[in-house]
Image (tube, rainbow, N blue to C red; front, side, top):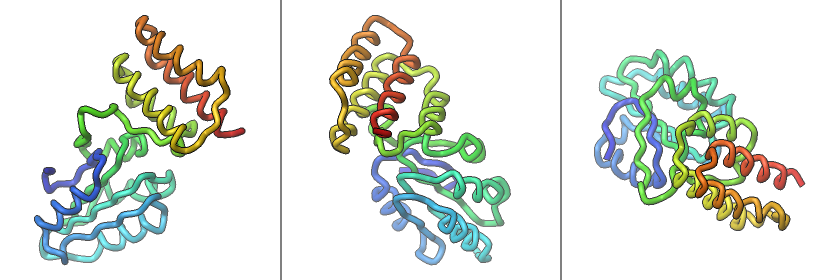
Length: 202
């Protein structure tokens, strides 16, 4: 499943990881913080737990769909210099939800289903920071992967009932055609992301 060491795990199904950890680690040495959005108070809880002394390795698991910037900044110091016997495991559905400074402190392990798109995108998460992080993280994205991302964005738009104008819907179709013609995937994805951002603001 995963190694029992400090790391970031990119995974679709948090519950499978929880089950594995609960089977592998005694309850008193496992502390899980599972939430939709990881906030500063969650970071404070994790830090407080980390400083409670333990005779054996203690595993602190952070799992969230979204990590806000303030909570991530609060974790930087303890991730760089964790107390003795403390192991941090961060679960996320997308590397792009974490700041580069967080990703630089822990190894990243991807456990997502390879049949799916390279990133499962929820349009609710799309803002300028998300777009910047995603494009930085996926500089070498291939055209087939970019197509999967576009389909994922469009699927999420329908699920979220985001009203797209006819010319915006045509943009999605044109994007797929342009990728077939070997246009730059990053340029096309940038246009798609900014179109969604504009539609969200209406």
